[in-house]
Image 1 (cartoon, rainbow, N blue to C red):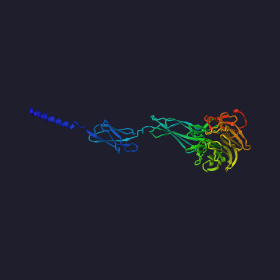
Image 2: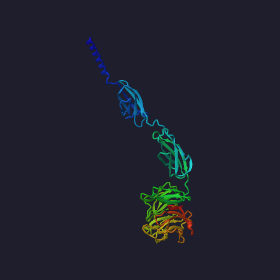
Image 3: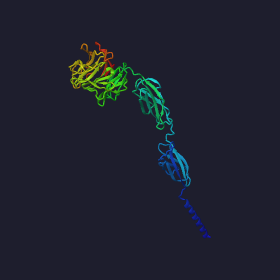
Length: 497
């Protein structure tokens, strides 16, 4: 009996051991397979990170968007798909023993659920506003439902041409634009972007700038080392006509064409340009034969033939060029090798006055020639000291010029007592019109007023370093010390048409 019991116990023990070998250390598993595509295009997405919760293994999709998780313990899982620029996606799946469960993901761009910014609302200038200045402050407003960071683009067009001015990457809802044209109608529109959705456009607004103010005075002022051309009216309102990033000087207005001719340094050479009265439509007139002489900032030129052409010097030669460019002709050459420094022509082009000097700016002479280059009359020559600033009256009866009566000469062409004189062709009389000039100063660059009853000119200390200012005075015979009136401070090269 005892033996039988022991034998029965041994059989039970072996059975228990057998059962233990079948279950200990083994798990019941299945597999998960899947595919990831882009929602809108159904294109597969490669390199998507696939993980599960509860955790199993981590895999990445292949070039076909497929993935496979093997030997996943039987359970219920949340499968996560994540990759940069797409919204993270989740799908539920149940893993069964010995089977492969399949799951599919359609991923959307991370911003696809992000709402667009509101339509920008233009505030200023108001739609159809008129009489605006040529510097305009643009103001608008916009918002974003998710408070995304917004950037703006301002687009500006005009009704006169095809120019489109675009100002990008604006972070504020205000923006100032300078240098608009007088008398133009403009159209403006704002575009807002949250860098996620498509940009949103504002309504199209329009406005008009004021008409060009009547500015009869032209002058030059130095800014950042460059000469810059300005215009001014009787009230002293100034308008900058040329950029301070280039060197532009010696403006000359022509009323027949409503244009201004001027000199500009281009690639180390001095060329003739024209522009409209408001500074727009700049046009380079000369090219191969530039303006040149002993001192570029003392060189002058002249309109001729009712504004159809321009006369300018190149050392000892006088050239004529069409105001529209081309047609360059040499019309005169000095016989003694002197440089032509200034030129002024009558409106009909039949009388041309020239100022010549040597390479040091001295041994000067002023004389007239006709349109064919034949010499007519000598106004002044053989005098010590510097000459300058010639201007011919509209009736060709008088000539305006300056002369340093101190007759001082040095290598710097310094002048000690430069005065304005008026030459009368009929009598040969030369009259000093600088009677009231303060001592120790120079009168320079005189020009007739439009009615030729006054002159506009520069006065400055003869130390050659002090500020230069522009004055006007009558040319009649009087001794009124208050006749000289300051017109513009810190300015040179006046013109008054």
